[in-house]
Image (cartoon, rainbow, N blue to C red; front, side, top):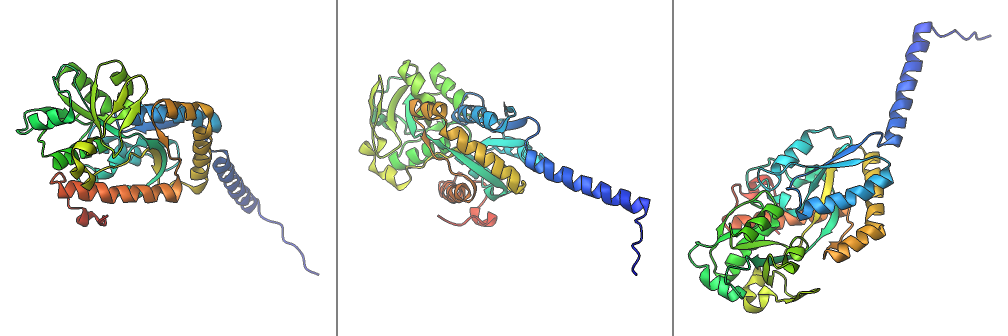
Length: 339
């Protein structure tokens, strides 16, 4: 007859504690999120990335059952200050980083020491860029502006250094022979304000960001940085810059990829919960209406698909900046493949 030996009190206590810890761990993972989430936007308040993140975060919060508090940490190079802060936080899903395609250039500009692959991104979408000037500048057409911009004495704003808007400005110079004096700002909103106040003459940002200012007569559009013109409701047609300068096709168009991300090493269950909430947010009538009214094309890419998109953008942006003599670090040294 085999006798069962009773477990010691210490062993029972140890086993019970381990079981409770495992149960608590599993419950915690299933219950994510149990507290508010912070979305750290790397660009300034009022810009396209900021507004898009605030709109989508509001509806993600409803799906998750907690608040998502959006804050801004602009500065550094290509969003490097906000990215650095976000990456220093625990990989538990309670810190989201609101970013854009422009952030992929932070490494080649010396402001960030890692590839974009350290992020797990969610892409909201984007809006095409437009070239606009101060209404009192005296420029009626893009040709007028290009003809006058031959000596670098015309100040231009295009968001932060390394942003998609800055890249588009560089491409505009390459494709037209113009020479602007680029003045960096911590985001699209202050760049546009600088154009409205006359601090700069030209500004390159997205149509979504400029459309209300254009309608209000505070900015004057001269051309779209896309192959096609654009009909802006209540304003008329904005011509394509490609019509007068076909060489722009060598560098453009480049599409926006505004979105958000968590650290790539966040738990899979956290990524799954955020993906579910993100999908639900983009499907809401409110977000759909916002996108239509503000000239955004929604993407909805997440996970591996979104990562592939950002990897392609990282390659394109980094090597374009390098070839335009606007990068500090050779992309090859960072292991970034040529597009």
